[in-house]
Length: 146
Image (cartoon, rainbow, N blue to C red; front, side, top):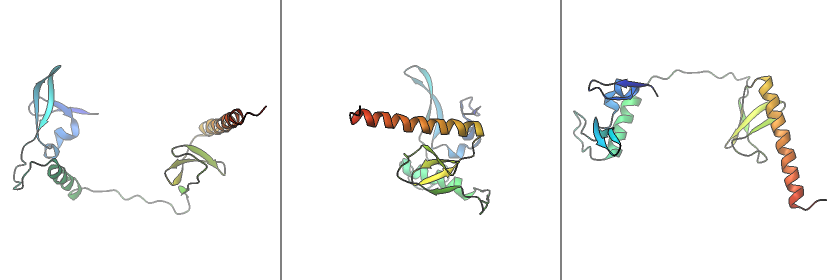
């Protein structure tokens, strides 16, 4: 977190110091259980004629302020590079797997291709082999193999 000091000498997140219109209230220092603490007390926005009692209303207005002036940089994905493929049920969610000697990470219903160094690829291969061996040992213990 990058901190900054506002015009009242209060220190908090730099983004909100630079964009006070996004603060959903008035920043104040109050006496708390363990000494002075920073709090954001609700106030009506200047120039707004709607009832600002609802936090939902405040969040909607803050969201409109962000999105109306937002500028997004367009990025282009190369068509010849496959970055994700549909996931299969044999790999747990949020785990790595190897497909055609490439490292993929499962996120929900997709395998997302990950660019990793050769050293890390070897570590992932070793981990997957160890994991498979461990599962085999556990299976044999549960099934009472001799």
